[in-house]
Structures are given as structure tokens and as C-alpha cells.
Length: 182
Image (spheres, rainbow, N blue to C red):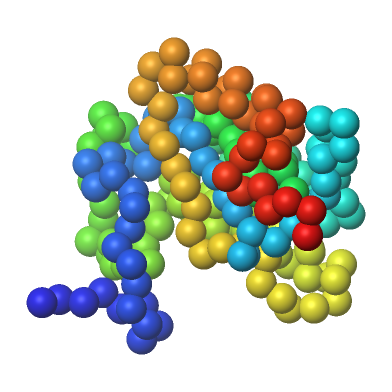
């Protein structure tokens, strides 16, 4: 039985769909959580998200990410106290794969295809962590190691997810990532 190790540690197999190239054109719903779902980015007051200084750093780095990545667009997003939800779109990708995975030979366990959702999330997390830790004057982890993604397949699904993101601050106390008043 072959085991996948990265930096001599066992890794859980990827949750990404093996039949899909995450650098191909499409719409993606992603959720990125803080480490241990720690409340870092602010709080909900009167059904509105109020960003903390760290939340403002996250938002600045989030928006900057789209100005430096010509293939990636943010359709909708919300920064919550301990996570981010977003609908992302990849457009005008010069390597058309028709949604089929076609990775180069260097696709080991830590490989991220260029201009892919995984590559974007890794770059965003890294940039935001650097700025957050400069602010906090620490080297504490910020993010959980993985993120959730979902390939959006049709308009109804897009509309349902878009409404979920927009309504997330209003529905915070019903959210599975809500930790109550700690």
C-alpha cells in the first residue's frame, strides 16, 4: 500500500474532484477557515460584519489578490468572524482543458497547478498571514490547512450560493461555524 507523505508527514488524500482541472474556466464556491475556527476577523453586530484590524488586513489582501491575477475574478464574498465564503470565477485561461484534469508530470502530493484555485488560496493565505503576523508581531498560524471548494454547475446553484453568502452575516447564529459567545 502506497502512503503519501509530504515533509515526512502523512497527508489526508485531497478532497478535490480528481476528474476536474481546478485551473480550468468555471465558477467555484470556496470557504477558507481560520485555524481552530478562531474568531479573528471581527464580529457580527446588528446582522452586519464589523471587521477587526486583522479582518481589514484580510480584506485588503483578498482584494489585492484579484488585481494581480488576471484570470481570477471574485463574483461575491463575505468575510465572517472566523471564515471567508466566496464565489470565484476563472476566465480566459490560455490552457484550455475542457474541464479535464491534465497535470504536468510534477504533480506530487503538494503540487498546485498554476493559476488554479489551490494556487490562489495558497498565495492569498501566505500574503495575509505575513501581514497579520507583522501586525500581531508574532508567527502564530492563521488558517486551517485546507479549504472547502465546490464547482458551481448551473445558474440555480450559483444563485442559491450567492444568496447564502449575502445572507451569511444575518444568519450567523445558525451557521455551523458559529461558536457562540465565548
